[in-house]
Structure formats: C-alpha cells, structure tokens
Length: 206
Image (cartoon, rainbow, N blue to C red; front, side, top):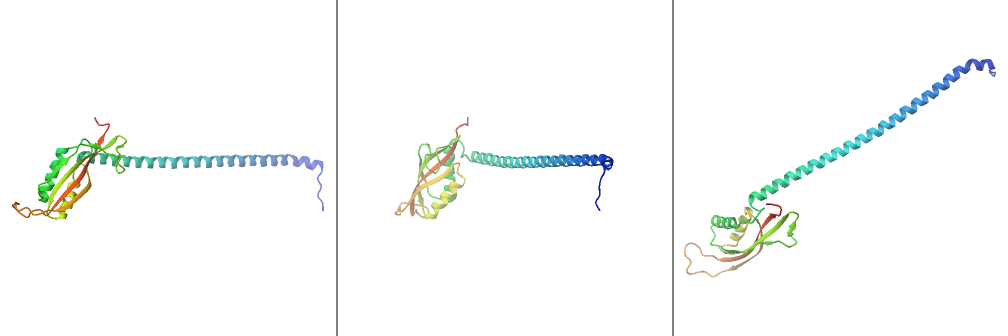
C-alpha cells in the first residue's frame, strides 16, 4: 500500500528535515575539522621526530669529535713528552745510544749524524698542515759478537728514543780476529747501518 504525503504533512516535517540536514552538515564539518587537525598533528609529530633524530645525530657527531680531539691532544702531549715533537735533541740521542749500548754490553759504537733535512718521500710527506717532518740521517758502525745483538740494539734504540727511528739499511760482514784484542771475546761481525732520526716540527709553535 503506497504512502502519500500532503502539503500539510511536508509543512509539519519540514523543520525536522531542515534540522536533520543542519546536523548532518555540522557533523560533516566537525569530522572535516578533526581530520584536518589529526593530519596537522601527524605532520607536527613527524617534524618533531625528524628534529629529534637530527639533534641526536648532531649530538653523536659532537661526542665523536670530542673523543677525537681528546685523542689528538693526548697523542700530541705524548709526542711532546717523548721529545718527538719539537726541535731535535741530539744530546739526548747520544745519551740514549750510550745507555742502550751499556745495557746490552756491546762494543764501542762509532756514529756520525748528518744535518737535518725535511722529509720528501712517499712514506712521510714533507708538510702536513701545520706540522713538518724532519729527519737527521746517522751512520753507525757496530762491532758485534752475534747477529741478534744488532737486532736487540735496534729494538731497544727505537723503543724509547726521543724521535721516530727508521732503519734505512744495515750491512753486516764477518771480521778477522784482532790479535791485540784484550778482555773478553773479540767481535766476530761488523755492522754498518744508516738510521733516520725523525722529528715533527710545529710550524706555529713559538
């Protein structure tokens, strides 16, 4: 059975329909506003997370740089205390040679130190920023009883020397017995070595 509406019926329900339409429109507006706010909050949250990640990354870099600076300062101070950083200390070198020779109970050593020069090779560049590598070449003659005496001597010499030591070459030959030698076994070998005493000069140091 069909239902029909008269004009009077429409008049009676008209206000209700208008109210319903208004409520639907208001609800849609609220949903739209809430959706926009939610999207804005999501963007704000994402931006805050990005800033936080950037700050954490920056903090990590700062900490890494701090550790690197501390390491470099410590290394700098160690080189300075040992005498590697700064002007060469030839008297300390000579004393160091004498001390090692005495501790190893070796024969008398002859040596000659050449004038200092800037290093210019592929191993150590002559200039690295504010620092410059300098080298003094020394030729040494060492009478020996055994070959291992030479290795022990060079090892002790480089372990605590007030410079970086680079052994460029060593030639060892057998020697004839000296009939005039007195006191203990005579040397059986003779070594002739060329050693570079390398120091680092700070160009900005006063």
